[in-house]
Image 1: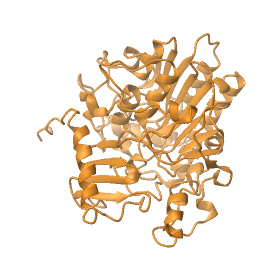
Image 2 (image 1 turned 90 degrees about the horizontal axis):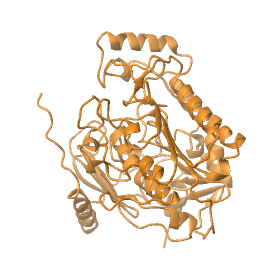
Image 3 (image 1 turned 90 degrees about the vertical axis):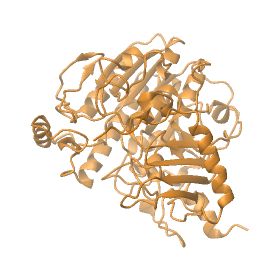
Length: 485
């Protein structure tokens, strides 16, 4: 028989309440409840009948946004009313996952619909410097090229992070136009990246604009939405918010200091722009609330132009949060395949087609969105590049059961596989705050913080999940040996 505590763990911790104290007797407080919890209901698979053919597709990707960094996922002090309303207009997924716990591999997963490690560039964790290997090659079908084959106009605004010029760019693999940064991070004002290079491009031409990057991305997106359209469109809106450096819209002086230090030689992933000597929870709050306001402006443009009903909108993050982020009650953060590094907010809205005010506990992963949008557009993956993601169209629109399959992650220092409520996790090296090296087994229904390692108690289940992980891993590219020195 299921105990009341176990039932609460399943229903509240993973579902509408979404946050809680630790194990044992769970004390819920209104400040930790998701903003919409009182009015949400469980998603019930139902045949929704017909839907508009070839809807517009708007994919909004936050950068390093933790699972509990927005109020509809339980943030107690960050207020995100526009994202809350977006969630109320559709489905909030409690078990939405990124393809990887780092930036560029997840973007490989989103753009190709495949495991990042199917391409050499997807092995980078993440891509940090220009080279001719680390990028999406020109012969790789992408979300944009597949939708373009069905008559879609395609745009990308914001962060690309799937390869540098002169070898790679969005406009070479399906996007009609691009405005943004090629790399993984830029100063929000100067657009200088951690390597000390200026990184702001209009298609493949370098441009200069010192306005706050979040505002630039928003303005470009709104401008495109307000144009007259005679064909369906795909827009990828890739914010760098709330990735470091920790700069709000008024922090020009901080930008000038960090930019000067970068140009003076404090470069690299641990250089001045990584901002280890700055930031605060208050600045982070300002950045996330600015992201929410940006999403509000984009949604308002859809409403004003009458396109909202025929636009499917996804909001999610490329990986879990870091530093000032909040992943409670999950454990772990960006860079690790524990839940805090890979489980992210995921909101899907399509007014008039998808149900409103609903919560889904179906585990979904980045590549599933690719497969879903490609099917909605009437396209399909080519036989030489089959998707690793599973389309959710049958489940969300035709009332079919949720797809049953394993979710897989692989990093140099950790690996994971989720099957139902069971999760295999492996940590390769001892690190502060990390589980002991070796295999771990967790039951996420009862232990979403991954604190009780059941590997010794459930050796058969562990062996089953390890074998499944190895089967998938055998189909992927091996990591190159670490660079000498």
